[in-house]
Amino acid sequence: MARVTADLGSTYSDAVVVVAVAGIVVVVCLVALGMVGLHWYVWRRLVRDTTARGSVGRRVGTGVIVAGPLLLIGAFVAERAEAPFLLTRIISWPGYLWGALFVYLVLWLLAGELVRPFFRRWIARADTLAAQVEPELVPATGNAMPDRPDLPDRPAPVSRRLFVSRAVSGAAGLAAVATVGYGAHGVLAGPRVERLAVPLANLPRAGHGYRIAVVSDIHLGPILGRGFAERVVDTINGTQPDLIAVVGDLVDGSVEHLRSAVEPLSRLRARHGAYFVTGNHEYFAGAEQWIEHVQDLGLRLLANSRTELPHFDLAGVNDMQGESIGQGPDFAAALGDRDPARTAVLLAHQPVQIHDAVEFGVDLQLSGHTHGGQIWPGNLLAGLANPTVAGLERYGDTQLYVTRGAGAWGPPVRIGAPSDITVIELASKQT
Image (cartoon, rainbow, N blue to C red; front, side, top):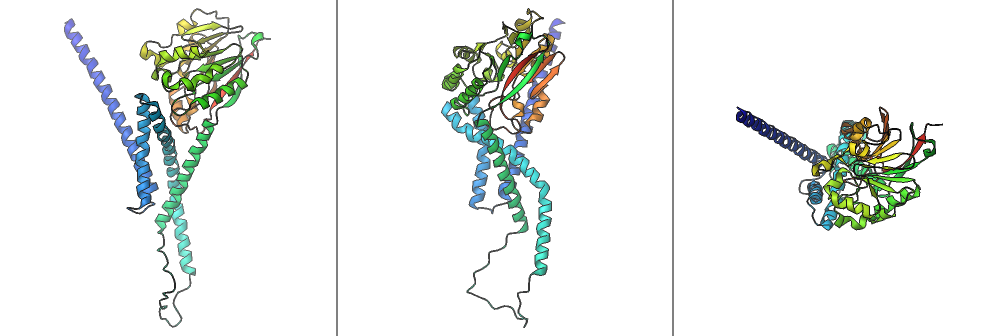
């Protein structure tokens, strides 16, 4: 009987796995079909409807719209497969930029669909009025005008449909390029500084005004390199903080490839030092090597651990992705035996870890991960997976602050979610 039960349990488990895999396959296929359909829509509006069959413009446009997604897929695969770093960099720039451009081509072209009918009616009305006022090109005798070989042939007029297609698609294309260009400039110029005062009930009066520079999601890798790291370090040091909190997703790549890019982090300066907790991307890039290397750079690791500072306890937990290698978050190890009378500030990469923070009586959790959505309307999708996308919110007696991050993942573009480094100034409620 026991054997039959075990066999049934094994069969049930196998069936669950098969169903799960089939579900994933279905979702992947639907997403792939959706992306193909959207690319066809972009090709139709930008290329087919605006160029002649067999023309150079149609061939070039088709080539760009075919090459763009292939480069995007290639960049993603090269990064995950640890391809030669130079090759990854060459592919990543055009590939990821196409990803951002494609999003806004679709959005602007869809907006163009709303004005297209009104544009056509306006052109038709203008043609009607022109026909009514145009003088007859026939002499009073009723005979047709003689041929004038000395006059050049007039070019064939552009059809109303073609004119509208070119005008609407051209405007959408320019708007998409301008949007992505603006977003890329915002990232490459470096993050801006946000300042926020956070009152804490248990913070002693002596800790009032203590400043923590919070930086997350720098994402040094094939696109953002050493120059970007130097801008981030200069910006942080310029705030003259008491403490620096690096809240995960520092890199997208191995120590071997990014050793030079991260070297400027060794120049971070604060009265009580710089602390680091892992993000999910560290576990995609060799977390154990990075954990060792960031400490070589002078950052102090908080791996499910805590340190006592003059006015509060500073704790840090590993990212949830660490569970893939048996190094997941352990709130009990970081916070279980602390003095509850002391203020606790927790560094945790993902905002969803707030629920454990509330359970362990944390006063303030500092997180990143969301990028604030990075590319609008990505904030709407980020809101589905995170309790807070950006800014300060309260959960019970615990406050959660989520920075939008300093860098960018994938396309070096931010729209509606500017990058930031936040200086949190702790405020005591005690008199």
